[in-house]
Each structure stands twice: as C-alpha cells, then as structure tokens.
Amino acid sequence: MTEPAYDLVIRNGRVATVSDVFEADVAVIGEVIVAIGRNLPAGKREIDARGKLVLPGGVDSHAHIEQLSAAGIMNADTFESATTAAAFGGTTTVIPFAAQHVGMALPQVLEDYHALARKGAVIDYAFHMIIADPTPETLQNDIPALIKQGHASLKIFMTYDRLKIDDEPLLDILVAARESGALLCAHAENHGIISWMVKRLLARGYTQPKYHAISHARFSEAEAFNRLIGMAALVDQPIMIFHVSTAEGAKVIRDARGEGLKVFAETCPQYLFLTAEDLDKPDAEGAKWMCSPPPRRASDQEALWQALELGDLQTISSDHAPYRFDETGKLRAGSNPNFKQVANGLPGLETRLPLLFDAMVSKGRLGLQKFVELTATAPAKIYNLHPRKGSIAIGADADIAIWDPERVVKLSDPMMHDLAGYTPYAGRTLRGWPITVLSRGRVIVADGKRLAEPGSGRFLARTGGDAAIPTGRLVADMDPARNFGAKLL
Image (cartoon, rainbow, N blue to C red; front, side):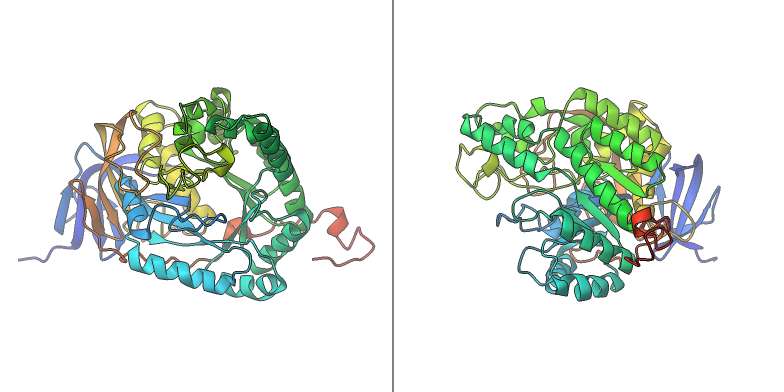
C-alpha cells in the first residue's frame, strides 16, 4: 500500500491570494505548504473545505499584550489569552510591543517580554521595541544590538506625558533606526494641543468619557503627521504611521507618498466601524469605547475606506489594548473617573478579521483579495515576514484559516476569548467566520476549541527588509553636494 504523499491535505476549498481566487487542494508536509493543485494525492490527514474559503492566517502587526502602561496599569491579557483570541479570530501571527519606560534598560525589557511569550503564546510572534528613554546607551549600543537579534522595528510616541519623544531625540531615534536598518513606527499626535484641550475641558467640568473624543482635536493628528514626515524626510528614514483616524491625516499621508517619500500607514477597525458617538453613554460606560486616537465621524470612516482602496493606507491592525471595565483597568480611579483618568485602549485581536470580512467580502466593499492583502500579505511584507507568512504559497508556513462565508455570528461579550470582559462591537451581526485555523500545519482551532498548547508559538526574528531601506534621495540640507560638504548622515 502506497504511503500518503502529504501530512495534510485541505481539499476542495476556494483559495484566495492577493492576485487570485481559485478552487484547489492545499498540501502540507511538516510545517510548510508544499503543493497547491487539483486532485492532489492523499494525505495522512484530510480536511474537507468544500464550500469554504482557504485564506492565509491573519498577520496583526500592532497589539499590546501583557504590557504595563506608563501609568502603571497592566492590561488584561496574558500572551496565552491574547494569542488564543487571535487564533479564534483567524490570526496566526502577531507583532506586539516590548515596552521600555523611562529608566528601563532595553535588553532587559526584551528578555522580560520574551519570557512571557515563550510561556504563553499559541501563535507565532515578533516584537516592536518601544523607545521611551533614548539615552546614549539605548541609541548607540542597545538598538543596534537588538536589531541584529531580529527586532527590526522601533516605536515612539509623540504624545502621552510619560512616553512622549520630543523633536530632537526623535531625530536621534530616526538616525539610529536608519543606521541599523530598522523601520520606525509612530503614534503621532500633537501633545501640546491634546494637553491644552484636556486642561480646558476638565476646568470647565466636561469630564465624561465622551469628552475624550474632543480632547484629541483632529488637527493634532495631521499636524503631528506632517512634523514626523518632515523629520523622517530630513534624514531619509522610512516610517510607519500607526492608527490613522481622520480624513486630514489620510490626506497628509497621500500627499507624502505622492512626493515619493517612504511613508507607510495603517488604520484599525475602531476607526472604520465606530464613531465618537459611541463614547456618549451614561455615567462611565463610555470608557469602554475610549482609545487614542479616538473614533471620529462617519465622514472619516469613508475617507479611510477610500485611502485603503487607493493604497494610501496599506494595513489594518487591531491595536488590541485590553483593559477591564473594573478597578483593575478602566475604573482604576473609581466608579466615576474623569476621562483623563481612564486607561485608553480597546480589545480587538479576535474581532479584527470577522468585522473586516463582513464589510469587505460579505457586503462587497473592496473584496476578498483586498481583504487578504490588508490583513495578511501587506503586513507580512512590510515587516519582512513574507513569504514565510501572509500568503498561501508553496514554501510558506502552513498558517491557514478556513472560513465559512455563510456562517452568521452575533458578537457578544461572553464569546470573546481575551480577558477584557467585553467587546466594543457586542450586538453586531456578521456574516463569515473562521471555523478551522492552522499554525505551521498544526490545527490550533477547530470545532470551537483551542487545540494548541501555551508556549507553542515561536519568535520570528527578522531584519528590516525592503520597507526599511532608505530611498537614497537626500534633501539639500543633508546632501554634501549641496550643503557645502557637510557629512551629516
């Protein structure tokens, strides 16, 4: 009797990539996709995907997991709970943060987060390094060494009292990223505008969560984008702008990319499906919908969808930042906090893909191939995880989500697998759901159950890749041929 040719064959599904949608079998040996075709030979195990979609597992490139905030609040999730939620939502790779705070040594920060992930993660992961204390040691020694170890993206904040990086040290970080071949990612909002608005609102008694949406004046986003882009252009360093929320912000990015600048950008489901009106709830209830930047207007949603269609925004991440609606999280300052006292962030790892599938595929907005691109292939390419991650392709890891496009699910708080205790999308009915999820050929979710063991996810070391390579076009002030011979880079 002939031995089965493959360890696993997923049969008769409709496979989707960025470029094509076609009926095929997908065969796996070990952890890798080895064949895609019709009527492939038998496998030791087979999954019948007739009537289903066979898609690459999602790549969520922006999530906060088991992370201590600058205010000293630990978010609700462990690596086990967060990555479990991701897996149930069809995501098989996640890039959370190793968060440095002032006074912390960056190598120790990385080791602490690695220890947590090794213990709990059930899907594969990489790390962005948050830089909050750009000392000479951090800039000259730690960043280059850690990038060589496979942590090829940095994140900075241009706002938040305990995290913000001012313009001069930001330029130092941009140069450190450039010299070591890393991508610089940023939370870009104008701190002064936000601080001024917060003080003015609170002094006049406007304390409810809904006023958080007003405190982050929309101009604070576009102004910070312009400033960040200008500094990045000065030193010719590629950047990724996180969680774009406004039409004005999207326009700034469109204009910069039109000028040939190497600017990447993302948005998140909260800016496509929520508005500031969602924060307008009785008492402190609106705190559940507080994140930064805040949800905006319906007109901004439309502008962001257009920016995604045009390619101005290349990815959609969750920005998963879960805090419970109790004294451990959102209500740490009491049952009736002012908006400044509330931890900012929403859970979203599990709902990211189903929300987007319903909008993009079931309802026909942008379509299935664009769904695959924005949620898996593009983030894998930008963060240099492709072709191993983000595509159904021969030689890629067998990270696969099998979707039932007809399954109807009404979102509810109890069905979520993270530890936030709620979802901001409760009550929404979605069509399309991942029913079987594989990571490196292992079935990790099936029949509503998690089958992967904690700690079975692996760290993905990576270099900066194409996205992090400077354009080579120096502005006049930095070009020795045009600045009287001064060599500044």
